[in-house]
Amino acid sequence: MVVVAFYAADLLDRCLSTLGDSLAVVVVDNSSDPEVERVARRHGADYIDTGRNLGFAGGVTVGCAQRAGRDVLLLNPDASITADTVRDLHARLRNDPGLAAIAPGQRDPERGDEARVAWPFPSPAGAWVEAAGLGRLRKRADFLIGSVLLLSDRAISDVGPFDQQFFLYAEETDWQRRAVDQGWRVALCSDLHATHIGAGSGGDPEVRETHFQASHERYIRKHHGPIGWWSYRSAMVIGSAVRGAVLPGNRGHEAAIRFRLYLQGPLRAEAGLGRTGLHIAHVVITDAFAGVERYVCQVANGLSDRGHQVDVIGGDPDRMRAELDHTVVHRTAASVWAGTRGLAAVRRPDLIHAHMTAAEGVAFLSHPTGRVPIVATRHFAADRGSTPLRKLLARIAARPIAAEVAISEFVAESAGVPTTLIPNGVSYRPQAALEASVVVMLQRLDEEKAPGVGIRAWALSGMGERGWELVIAGAGELRPSLEHLADELGCAASITFAGQVADTDGLLAGSSILLAPAPSEPFGLSVVEAMSHGIAVVAAAGGAHMETVGATGVLFPPGDVSAAARAMSLLADDRDELRRIGTALRLRQQEHYSLARHLDRLESLYQSVTSGHD
Image 1: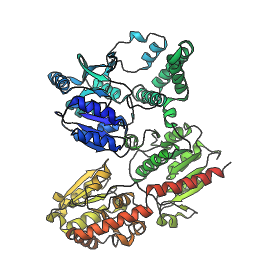
Image 2: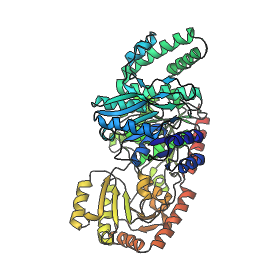
Image 3: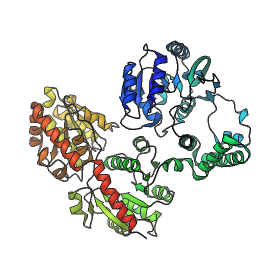
Image 4: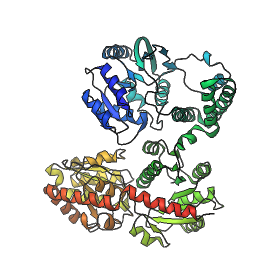
């Protein structure tokens, strides 16, 4: 049983009281509400505080991870079902191996009215049928609403988790569409019943409608493409305009709201909810997800929380969408051409923030007149462009840049142009337990990061023979040769090559030491993230490590395998010293490298650039 809660502790109390205490329940709290936690624990449920509002899909993903290998019943806090009904429902799911999902009928708890549970999949053709006033003819039962929905573990394993780009609404529609496309079926058990208030914790009706229609836009774009979306939107505009003109009362008012939403575009309207600040477009022209992309996500979320409207262009589509808040609009851009189209589609930005040279070119091409100010962040200690031609093009693209940001003193000194020093920052994290005998290397596996130095130091330290483990998180072209090196050095049994890790916070929270062998790191976001968890850092004494870690951590001469091995080994043998260093590094991060401090400085720069720009 997974219940995703957002405040409304009284509804959760009613829900769990009806269910009883005979079934295992996980409450995922998207509101971090102490009253929700008290209710969950009073009923014996497992409680998970997500730390921010992940939306329904994100909450379901967290909850399902706690119940991996089991069928999962999704239950809204404003719904109620008895344990006996759950068991009947589960028996029917298990009796039909072709079912991906099953649901009971639903009634309003006050009036007893039957609610519609099974619906046809949204589609452009369906939207035109609705626009023609023939919606009553659409009686297909393609998917079941997610307020009380039992999912088969076999189907979850086959179809995958809920898509987290759907913040609220349509996430269960999308999942069932994917399941049906792969040959699964869904079923409604109309002789079994639950109650459901409907929108019991949904907040303001207009805001709820905006989220609802924005999720439908995501769904149509995903499953029917740009042309399908154009057709669907046209049908919705025409249909809602007619309804708004002829229907009386609330129905006409709701149609008028829908008409305005589809004229503007629901996703655009959702992104603008409550926005009072600047409209900022962050551009990073890659299809990857590494330090720069992770930084862009953190900054975009932080700026959005502060009331700015934020668009992000570029980065790995799946990882960026999973990391970005629902209030941030994301467009993919793996090439300069795709980035130029994506940025040109951003309506009236107040400012463009470009990350790396290709993004600066996109900013120049999309807004050649210079009417939109451009801020560029220097993420690397290197000149723009790798060939003479690219250097020339980079200089041309850099001309309209209003301000350049250096992420560290090391980068600023090598920039060759005036820069504003704004060191990166990370969010507050709770102190790691520092009980696990785990060392982490969190970095790309390429030459400039010197991962071979880390593996050689690990082998020389002998820590693997004393029960410690080295986890290498990251991808890159050197992985096969590094695995071979570990075999040659006889330490492969104590090393885990984890590849790209989505939950870096979870990885760091379960570690005690971070090893950072890169000799000239421009900033080292993973180092500062480790500091935020209070983990002891052993780093090469070069690049920005001299600023971030400094004398507070443990530095070794770049490339010095013996010194790195000694440093790790001493910490492994002296837990008190390990904890002392971790605590000191955490305080250093909070004082100098917090995300709040970084955002304060960015906002100040943004205001000065936009206020002085014609």
